[in-house]
Image (cartoon, rainbow, N blue to C red):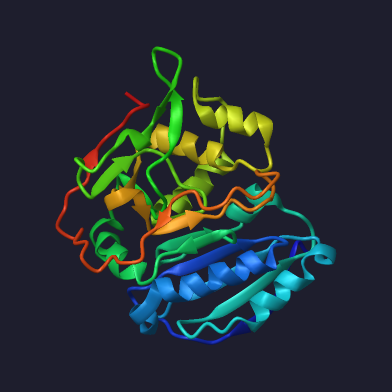
Length: 288
């Protein structure tokens, strides 16, 4: 039995400066509708560049019919659209690892996410400037919040200690898991790394705790081992008033038993933020 079936696709555009967009969905049709509509607004006037969209619906079919209807009926004018409806449950880990690298940067969005209007206009200069960097694997659209490990006093060291006194772009060696741009070379290298992975935990990493609690729901533990071994880092935006270009509504799912609401304030006016000439700084709470 095939794990997935391509159900719906139509032709679009191809362009040099474009994104390969992957939306990971399950049985949350209202959340998926909100996510897809925000994605269209996120691309905004850059639609003609040809951003291909893949909507991956985790199985089984019996619980995903309504979500499939939302995905199939959604009109995507910015490029080619493809809907994949999985016949079996792959889990969060399986969905992420099924993303194939190509030539364009990859935007991965989980279905309970919402993106900022015209946010791509803000992020595009960073893509152009750093997509070929040997040290930067991507750009997060989420707020500064990630935790990696314990400090010498036993407490969690956090990226959200960054405040508005820091530059508009900071680097941090952790991936965001619901709104992340991945540069294709590093994603391809990660998939190769994973096929030869020696499963050795990173001492003190919070990813180990998460992975123990949910092995099929925490794929980021494997990516963190890759980042740590290659000394890579991720770009995060430090927007005013703790805003972000992507928020998670934290709907009930594999990692949350009940809905918790948005994790941050969605940025609605990003026109005045000029990040194209700002060099990122390394601000690392956890891997020193």
